[in-house]
Length: 347
Ligand code: GTP
Ligand code: MG
Image (cartoon, rainbow, N blue to C red; front, side, top):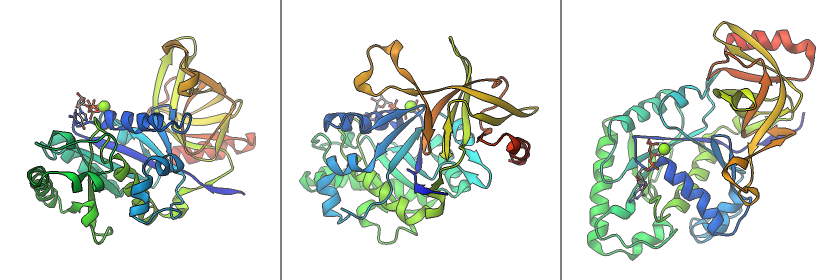
């Protein structure tokens, strides 16, 4: 069976109001600013950031770190989490759908309660992660230039702004050490297998976002086993993130597809609280590319097929009672349905 490498799923976690959503908005907005229409696509509950788009706007940093031509991950699929429920829904047999995590902290306030909770969750799942120390623009005396890589920005600051930044980073490093984590500013990390990189960012000015994406690429390639990112061309495997009633569509399931592909008309096997469920896919729905969006009501389009890695809305009769976190598998051979149902029961 033909295999290809998919984009890693990157789950974004942290305390409330640290800037998780704005950071993702900024990553998407940056691609628009760099005139890459359609390069960064919105999925259901996720954003796909292809590596070529990153190289375009992070070019000077990619060159400085001598990474050009060395990145083989096709991009990243970012999953924003409003709370912890979403992370529990990312479970699959033998681990998590999340390949990587970004723990976002507010650099002016440190780890905070839910930041610490997120950290414990990440540790318990054994997911490789990086820390975005966000709100860099709020460091007293910091001079911002839109979208500038942190590595270049820090060289252009007055000493007192750098001193304040270092003091904040030092405090964060201390806090992290109480969780048994050794961390350092990413450009000072000597051994990525021991130390967690801290990337200062600003979701308002876009500073450090290039660095964050570049560090994620490096960490992906070093620490996600390559087999994990290999996808087959067979029937889709995914996880249900959310089940809801949609006007005009009925009950729909928003799912993450981490392997294979799903087609309109496929049978899917998934699970409710009381056991397996079977449904035939009536429609697959994705957000429209920005440039084709006329008005907010006209945000979605139907597609024939979706390949991993992706987020998709599945419209099918029989999804009532399906629970978030349930596995969802496409089945192409009707005779395989009992076998897949058994697999799902065991998850
Ligand atoms: P929840 O989803 O509620 O957990 O919050 P969040 O982490 O997604 O935070 P969000 O992106 O909604 O940002 C929260 C607030 O912080 C907003 O008012 C943002 O404008 C502000 N904010 C986010 N990032 C930055 C930043 O880098 N600098 C500054 N100055 N403000 C920021
Ligand atoms: Mg948010």
